[in-house]
Length: 334
Image (cartoon, rainbow, N blue to C red; front, top):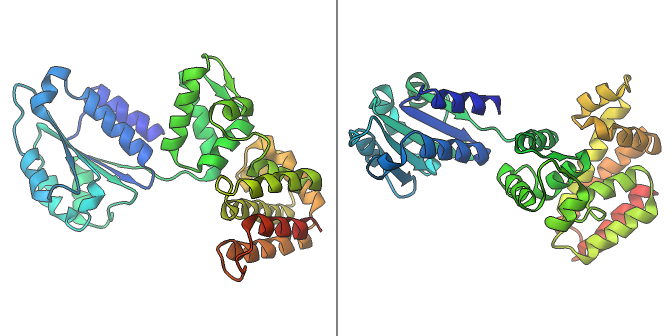
């Protein structure tokens, strides 16, 4: 995020490069940066003749170079934005010659999503020398809640740790999807609101009581009544609660417990850092470690591997996933 701020600041200050290669697994910042360049580098009256949007699937590298070499009309610069540039991956190397000697009056933006250009290749080195390379890396699950907090803060909102966790569990690490849901909340909630699980349930439709986060918590506390209630809800709503996701999250949880059992330092800060979890949830992990000795945790990890395969249809004889999940829960809590 700091790299994004610096890039935006440079452009605002007039330090504009002739080529921007925006690449990486996380498309959110690639879109945001290209949109910023599209909206700010040229004045509105200049864009009609001097701003062009191309798509990788529709053009060849030669077309991009031809457009980039044009001179602007009645403006200091022209902007050429190539969206979905990853569709040109087989011929992307052909940009090498242009990158070595780019047109100074052109701002060429290459949006190379979901993958990266090989950093050993001449085209990458040429772009980096003459322009800017920005790599948008995918965030880990444990990094997304902090990202949500940092995104909301300048907009005048706060969010509880549990609410952040709900969004991550339901939407994964797709920052674009998460941002869309946050924008929906901003429409209905006044500024200076702290977003809670109740707000998310009411406005996004994610249940604050029946979700994988609450199931994990119930299992860790050995609260069998609550755990079976949640699993029954999952069985009744299988499309919204696929077993493969639940098993993956539980596997991650018990793997973390295995790591916790191997730690000598149980200081909350040390635990939060080692397990890569929000300090808010550390007590939950410590309680679960007391309820599940190391040997039992090892058994559960093996169980989860077995049921992961079954949840994908292997050796399960068409057993409904709700029934599989109930069987798994019985074995975990026994």
